Image: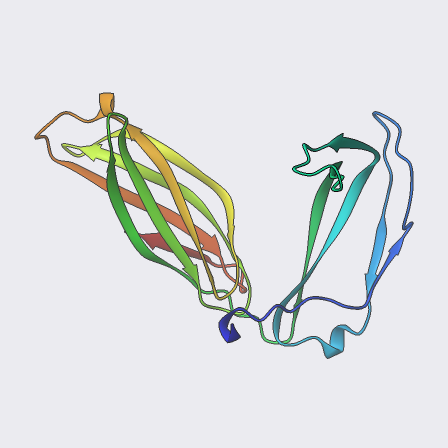
Length: 189
């Protein structure tokens, strides 16, 4: 879709490209992003993967004797690299905060945070369950990324034992993000 154009970095050089890391040892990996002047305004990104050289192969059940299927399992983790170029705009807002009854378990809140700039935002803060002006429970939100021109739904379960029938409760989100000018922007709903 035109609203979610990826701005992937094509020219990146990594040194070393391959290495073996022993347990409890360290390895410095350097990378250079070339042609940054040709990147579009805003955020561009690339993901570097570090992968375990040991792989596991698991045979899968086959519906037919002529079909042989196997699954290759590799352990790896990703290192995201973000490059800001030109005019960067980080703009986040709370799209909605809803509560749904989850039968016999409690209530689930869903907080939709939207980023409408050309760079992701990282939200932090708390969601508070309040009764009679007292905070009963606080749910911590730590460094959750919301992609540029994207949305992230944050949810959690409020257990039944925290909610007494027919009492009045308030759910309040007190979030913030740091914008491109290193200013704290508050998001309250």
